[in-house]
Amino acid sequence: MENSEQKKPIILSGITPSGMLTLGHLCGAISNWVKLQNSYDCYFMIADMHAITVRQQPAELRKRTLETAAIYIASGIDINMSKLFIQSHVPEHAQLTWVLNTYTGFGECSRMTQFKDKSQVHAENINVGLFDYPVLMAADILLYQADLVPVGEDQKQHLELTRNLAQRFNHLYSDTFKVPEPYIAKVGARVMSLQEPTKKMSKSDANQNSTIFLSDSDDVIKNKIKRAVTDSGSEVKFSDDKPGVSNLMELYHIATNKSISDIELEFEGKGYAEFKPAVADAVAEYVKPIRTEFEKLMKDKEHLTKILQQGADSARGAAFKTLRKVYKKIGFVQF
Ligand code: TRP
Figure 1 (tube, rainbow, N blue to C red):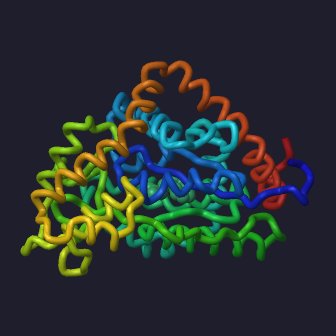
Figure 2: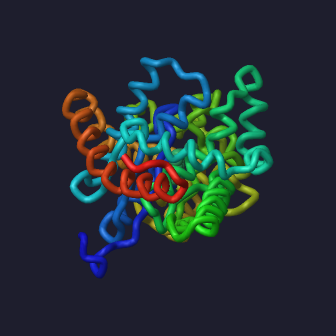
C-alpha cells in the first residue's frame, strides 16, 4: 500500500451513537459503505465525541457505541478491508480539532443550521462543544486525508466548512490537507417515518412506531409496518400525493429488490390489506440476518472491544502523520 500507484482513494464516514440504528441508517448509509469497501480505502468511525455534545447517560453511551460497531459489522463492514474504530480511541481527533479551532471564525460556526436547530431543541445545554461540533467533524475528515465523504443532506454544510478550513490552512502554509468532496450515493434510498411519511425516519423520533430499529424483533417490525400510516384511496401506487404508500413501496423494494413498477403490477387491484402484510414479512426477513449477527456480536463484548482497539491502532498511523505535519507547519516544536 506504500506504493502510490496502488493507492485507492480514501473514504471516511461515521455515525453518532446517540440511539439504536434504524433501517434508515442501513439503507441510507451503511449499505452504501459496504459497497464502497472494495474500491476505496475506507475509515468508518463511531463518533462518540460528537455524541457528548448532547448530554448522555454514561452506561447508555457505552452500550450504544458498541452496538453501533456491531451493526456496522453485522451489516457487512469487513474489518479486514476497512478501518472500523471509535473516534475517542484516536486522540489525534481532539488534538487536530484544537488547532483547527484557531482557524475557524466564530461567525462561521454561528451560521451552521444544525447548531441553530440543536440550540433550540437543547436550550438547557447550549455548550461550547455543540458549537464546535463541525470543527471536530472537519478534524475527523482531514486527519485521514479523505478524498470522499459520504454524508446525508443534513451534514453537507459541515462538509463545506471542512473544505474551507482545508483550503484556508493549505493557503496559509502549504499543501497539508486533501480538500474532500461530498459523496452522494447514486441510489440512496430515503426511508421515511412510518407515522409521518413526509419526515425522515429518525432514531430519536418520540413515537417509536415511526421507526424500525435494526434490533427490532420480527414481530415488532411486522406490527410497526401494519400500523404504518397509509393514504386515502386503496391503490398501491407510487406518487408524491401518496407519501405513506410510496414509503412502504420503497421499503418493499429495498427488502425484495423488486422494482417499483413490478410492485405496482403485483398489487394491482389489491388493496392495502394485502399489501401491508407482504411488506411486513419482507422487511422482517431482510432485517433478520443482520439482527442475528448483531446479537451474536453483542454477546462477546470483549471480542468486539478488541476488534475496535485493532481498528484504532490501524487508523492512528495516518492520523498521527497528518497531525505531525500540522504541528510542524504551525511552529510547534517537534516531539
Ligand atoms: N456528524 C455526523 C452525523 O451525525 C457523524 C460524523 C462525525 C461524520 N464525524 C464525521 C460523518 C465525519 C462524516 C464524516 O451524522
